[in-house]
Image 1: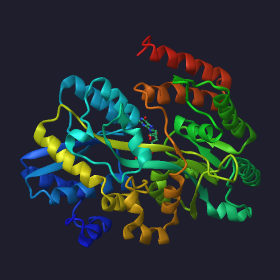
Image 2: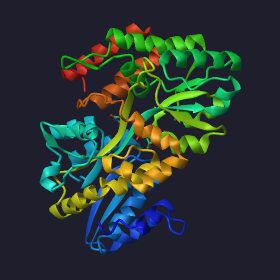
Image 3: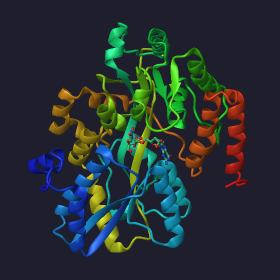
Image 4: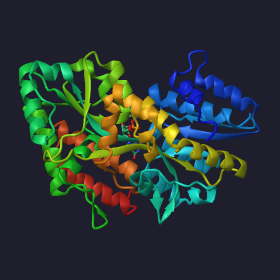
Length: 418
Ligand code: FGO
């Protein structure tokens, strides 16, 4: 593609010193006759800037006639709430970020345009991600900003205790215990939420769906929650109940967390220590643990007008190209969704200086998704997430908390509560 030149890369990677990308987009859209809105859930930092830089560059290829306008709608959950409200009011954007379960929900209202109808070919896109946006054999979105959980660690603190980066769960717990005893404070920081739980659960061999049925209180789930509760009781795990982990480094000595690769730029900015990144501890040292895939896809709404849909189609093609995914990936530590990005000099050069990015790409080979059920967002936050919090804070036993969650999820899925 002609427009993907060296200048393009330099432009994106230098970040816009002179004018904020938001301002540039405003100017681009003022003159355009077709404006395709893209509602997103990035609240700031590298991901938001990288998205805006992409949009600026895309708009530049459109000769001022048409433009994409990114509109932040708060965080990811605010975004899906706004989209549901837009369905009711009729004012839907052309495009939005969506988790797989959001897509399942939007499809219940037949609100999404299949990618085939837009002429979008996902050849070269990681099949793991493509599979996740495929419903009834149709592809309803493009993977855009897909993250994978990784192990973050404090190299200085590990050095102080002569500790190696743990590659197994047993070694991880032993190391966390050793450092916590030395520091007299818990050093594994974790958010008692579904994301963190999913890493431990998947790695211990759990699965949320059993014969097509959602099971939140399986013996594996109870074992997983007991491990976290035990970690708190034994003094090696510190629950972080408000804000991102990178916003909580100050609360005590930090050695480890298991968190999204997309957190990297935020971690780096907040860390007053030498930040390390590694693949997740596994059940054995034969392979890393399973990371949860998070981040979102871009979908196109059926109700958008045809001209906007055409802009959206061109934008989505641009966004999944190997070069754009390479540039976006190195800027954000999201996993490039295009398998061709790995060979791009943008990536190969960057990895030499920043091995953390290579770790995310490697970890993405050991990846799992949460269930793509239309009610999953509510379940993962208000039911399972709530149960995890209650157990970790000692308000219920893991078994009681998960039994209650199972009942609540069954009621919700049966339509008894909404
Ligand atoms: C976040 C959320 C979902 C669903 C998972 C779902 C809804 C989780 C988790 C709940 O793009 P990811 O990998 O990472 C985000 C990225 C852009 O904001 O940077 C991360 N970040 C941002 C600021 C910061 O200071 N530190 C930092 O790490 C941010 O997490 O997505 C991971 C976190 C959560 O939002 O609390 O995905 N998630 N499945 N959310 N609504 N629905 O089904």
